[in-house]
Image (cartoon, rainbow, N blue to C red):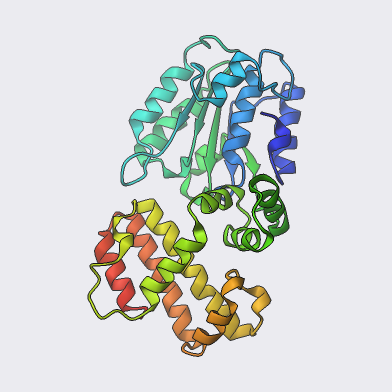
Length: 321
């Protein structure tokens, strides 16, 4: 692993590299920006750099320490993720972090804990983390990854050095998809637009055949059905995947709205469906499309709040067809 592998986040990389080179490390960092733009990758490379046996700012990626961190089995580098259906980070997980950080490094040079989706902490977990941030242990670094800074306590934010991350340029994502996955330009263009500048999301969409899933969800929720809703395949998907798929549907209706307002097919994310969008746009007013998009967003919020997926999707579908 190397800092050169981080694409399009020059400021974030420069801030971290400079801190390492000048030995001015903060006890806690907050990597803030959209999901899928390189926060987790930079956190891992940062952890490797702090523990690399060669002792240089750019980790070698070849020593035992670097390889263990790459495989997430280094005893001094830990990851915390949201758990359960509610996708929350609970107090027990943060207590484990605090306890581990209070100990001396076992075999590395520094203890590093990376809290992914830190903006999903419960109130109790956030208060527990705050105590650790107020009295940071020696030879330890805490890295918080978050996409929504408004969900974090201001007192937590103030005790972290903020590192901003930004969506990537569409052409940058497209070029990387063509280079890394050897896909054709047309497919890469759709995936890059769909991912909204998030390379991680683009890679995930590619693996999950986003074009097939898009066509499936559009047909299911737009075409009229004669027989109830029992056949909706999305009922069986994991909760987080349901919301990802609904985002695909929202983007499709957003394209309909964009075309109704602009008549410009070059602005479409689903540019390969231009003829279909032109044809379907005749059915909708601006007000109706805005209402549908708002309904999809509301349904996503309900599902995030642990609402019954089948009921939420059924009501949404009734308001779309």
